[in-house]
Length: 315
Image 1: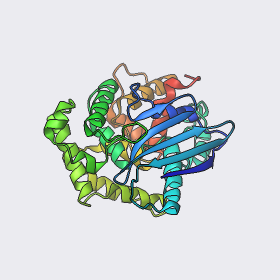
Image 2 (image 1 turned 90 degrees about the vertical axis):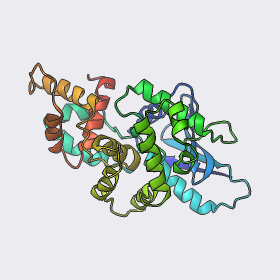
Image 3 (image 1 turned 180 degrees about the vertical axis):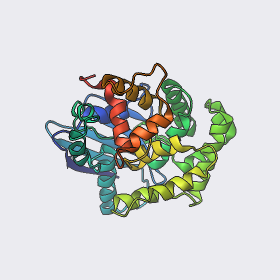
Image 4 (image 1 turned 60 degrees about the vertical axis):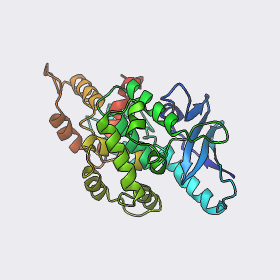
């Protein structure tokens, strides 16, 4: 079954940010792309699916979803509604960036940082579980090592769409694996345990992460603190993992990413350029946390601007 829809993008939409977020793995196993197209393997419930974003000229975007449904009956109208919600979410179109940029324009510390990166949104993972599994995978290792582990995990799960793209596994597919499988993918024992435990809790309904997102996309209040408390109770999941997943999986813009090395490094650079930090020692997590706290409810979006500093023409 194939569903297609069109979305009109804002004038300041940064397609390069969206595409580069999904182009981390040059092996093109679960994501394939060219200059104007992203093709991504996902699980649509328990069914393999391929999600395609095709950027045209101007502001037009075509989004299509091809589900390997076999003989299973699919509600086409509901699928199209859910696809539009997912696409807008992944593109960051639900994020109140205009309000944030108006706020930043009157703030001396943020004004130049944000002005150099107008229209910056935070691209989203295809599901909260994908964001959480990526955050767990990347704990305390380099980006290159994390990409390698992710690739091996996707290969090990081995859910192929009929197009040939391999789908990122959901919790149910992770539970077909065991510690031996994950160790063969170079996961540490602790990360393997955390990922399998998380998948089991989601599958059992104790952590309904997809429902939390669906409710939010349907306009219900997002209970970030309640979600935080439920996730922090899972052994192996700490504050950085949760705040990253809340940002990349749910689009929550007020998590505090003070534990992120790149955020601290670029904050030190920013404050040094503003003559507000001259210490020879590196800026601390506590100092970063205190600085970000002043910009609530935009802390994670400020962190995203700090991430993007090195890519900006102004820095």
